[in-house]
Amino acid sequence: MKLRFLSLLIILTLLSCKNDGNNSEDNYAYLGGEIMNPNSDFVVVSKSDMVLDTIKLDNRNRFLYKVNNLKEGLYTFYHGGEIQMVLLEPKDSLLFRLNTLEFDESLVFTGIGDKKNNYLINEFLENEIQEKKIFKFCQLKPNVYENRIDSLKAFKLKKLKTFKTKYKPSALFEKIAQANIDYNYYSSKEVYPFVHHGNNKTEIIKSLPKDFYNYRKSINYNDIFFKEYHHYNSFLRYSINNLSLENHLRHSTDVEFKRSSLCYNLDRLKLIDSLINNENIKNELLYYFTASYLSKSTNSENNDVFLSAYLSKSSDETGKNEIKRFAASLYNLKDGGHFPDIKIVDYNNTEFNINSLINTPTVICFWSNTFYNHFKESHYKLNELKVKYPEVRFIVINIDDFGSDRPKTSLKENRFKFKDEYQFKSPKESIEALAIQPMTKTIVIDKHQKIVYSNTNIFSMNFEEQLLGAINR
Image (cartoon, rainbow, N blue to C red):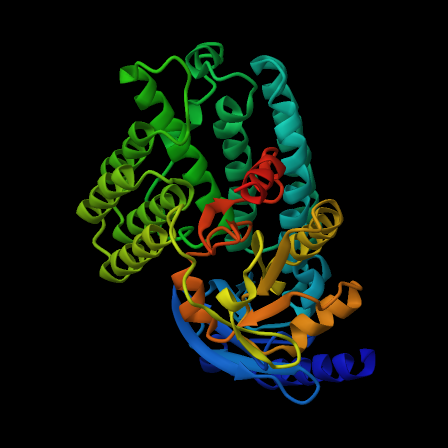
């Protein structure tokens, strides 16, 4: 495998050298790679929400693609539900190798342009680790917390300075790398009032140093360049949460703050509408927060009010139609209603109507290879629950739409049994009908095929109490 990958690298290098002498042809880049345990037989390359091409993998699970008329910047490649960004500049010849079972962790770049992209992917992975520390640090007093995250930022800036001295990267790379550090730092500040213990958010905000959010004065909330960049989008969501909290607390009469309250969530939509001018950024934020609210709410009247507020503010007709269908699916899944007729297939390719399997209290869970850690953790948890509650049937459904080979392999490699494991007969339609968002969504049904809980979570603290309630109905 290493020899095959090396041969592809040599080809890329020769192609790059061949064009070196012709300036008119310098505005290009190559992107290629090798994918282990592929989830499909193709990759998709895009830029700024525009698909450039769909490239089929060869019989060795490799591909090579030339980007002509290159617009330097961040490009996206997509494979089997996973998305990763790369920085491409003129005459780059970038190769990667990845394993879909550990997508980000396995990703390694080689070729011209590898140093900057390996730096960025390593920063991404380090930020994921750092996020866990941040949530612990949030329990500290504001001044102490600020000192901790200042130290983390200083360490990253020193690391970036060393990289710049050694490799002399482009101004474009420096812009992206600096933004990566800044927006992660800003996000750490925006989450503090939410993660810090206690529901009296007014007192928490009052305890912050006066200059704690001074950086907001220089933030561009309509940054077209970074609008597809993960760290910028994460910051926007955290900042919208926090700015809306401050607005909400000015008029709320609630003794304790509740993130699920209709009033607070309406305040978020109002803020987005007033703060964001760029239509794409505004519509994406409106869609994200609306889908998030609806997926967690069980109050149909509040959902109607919230849906109307979203529809009045969004200009994205496609997004509005999707949200309306999502809301309709949630309404059809209301507690006390009948579970819909969904066709599922086992790994012997036998088809079932799911209701034909429900004659005892039943838990229905979902998983995808795209969320591989959730797949493993949820199956371990389900194995524990099966032992504790033998009278309950646990139906587990893989929602992926790329055949049964990859899910079967995942189950075998982790030694999970195939009993009560299924896939959807029609994944797209079934996912929409069951409003599967987020992936942790769990549905509990009684022996009469009535929905007891339409949106719970096997990892929640009160799940077993909910389960006992379903058993005793």
